[in-house]
Length: 395
Image 1 (cartoon, one colour):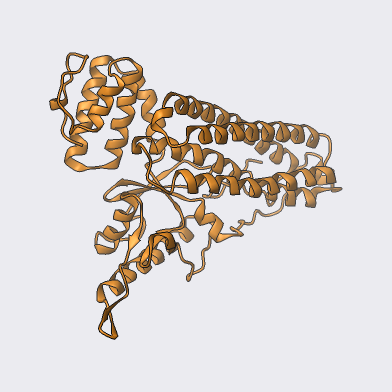
Image 2 (cartoon, one colour):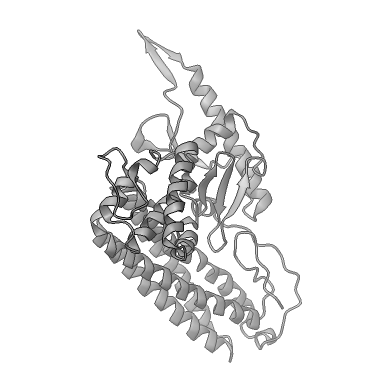
């Protein structure tokens, strides 16, 4: 029987047979290996750009730690998969419970990294994508491994039953629900795509692009308030103070009520959208935002993660590596002009990736790359004969 999936990326295991579970375990092993590959590539980039990163040693320690975690998870899942082919024992149920507990414990380590390295201004913002991925890849793995709880519950049903011996079950598949709505929301990743689109990524699933119309918005002040918050770091929604003192009296500020009305409207529309598109079933009164106390009164941030557009760095790095020298230089100039004209974050992300590829190919030096990113310094001709600073619009 083929495994069915929710939009959230989790498999539906309510009626899964042992063969179904073993099939899914092989997918989990492959994902562990992919995580190791990605973390090793990030490790190399951190080592190459140490001087431009805040506390690169801490990043390398974090990467090395989760390389060990991914390898251990892969070995344990492979062992359990092999054992389950013979029989289902209580020992296997305990093992999946331990994996589940481990995921929750390690998630605190991810949160610590996020607080220290992401929720702040970086030394070099051009490496924001790298820090986001270093945090996000292990966090996504831990989130996905929470399926161990579903596997454990299914094995509890199968222990001692005939269905445990590779016999497909015939029970109706019931849709599972999200047990912790707050945890579900905090693992969502939302990115700015354009002034009319955002990207939403659920752990274990590829990012999907949605327009304001898809999300239930209209092109009005409510949408503009939302997209501005997603687009502009540090992604804080500012209502301003609720009152102003006039002598001994306090006077209510109408602008505050207007802005609070907008964020409540944003909240309501997104809850309807998430409940339609997933199994989350968030309560109507659930808040997708919370006070940002460290920023002061009247400052709010969304509970979901806000980052650059997912996949930009990875997709275009391989594409630009295949460009000829002239084509790559032309692409850099085109992207610089596009960002100057539109200020789209996607254009800026691609521009930075293209610059890094050109540097790796020896077409541009570190100084020349910095010159392009920071064009206010003195103009001078690049070593590559075709590219000058005055060819590029200010970004």
